[in-house]
Length: 306
Image (tube, rainbow, N blue to C red; front, side):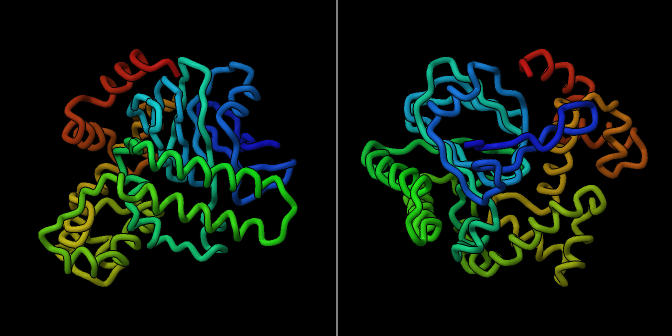
């Protein structure tokens, strides 16, 4: 089984992205144990890469670190990481890992009647700028172990409705993990929080498509046919930050990804994320991050072995 297949070579042009493969065929879901992945890698060091699908990684005994969009997280027993499509990450183990990895696409979700709204409401796949793991209790770990083993067994079987069954188990796993999720929403305004779910999801979709072209809240508000103030209030009530802050985070995140994982110049990166004047990008980044982009690149390239 090929769990993932490289989609592009790493060079100065782009961060490598991976497609999901099983027996040389592109699939919408796959599962493997961390032991299998480590054995297949033959102790080769993982490199920064992104996926075109969701990743759920359960570290049962592993120690090491998981670097996601330049932020470093310790990997401890019964930590579960949830990585969104497009996030750049890298895993470094210090011991022989034990655990599970499930990868699934948006197509798999839709075919099994799992909506994007449901995924968003779980608060497991974190918003821009922060992807900490959840830490599950022993009783939850015992239950999830059974679910993962069932999925693994079904995946390699030829039984009828195998992916429908896997979809049901996957939904159970996500719902069991949901109580542990980090929830930044504003509980003081539950009506706005409930009413804003569709707006939040549509804003996030537009942000991923247009963040290099649309730098103003008004751009998104116009597309959503609402006022900028209302959009900011909905986003703030739902996830704890304003629409403006999310736009700034997304631009800063893309700059960091390109700054760490490619050899583009600062000027080239500024143009790539929609700044016509590199000086404007320099001021923007320093205001957001508290240091210059050149200082950021120098510090991260020194601190992280990439």
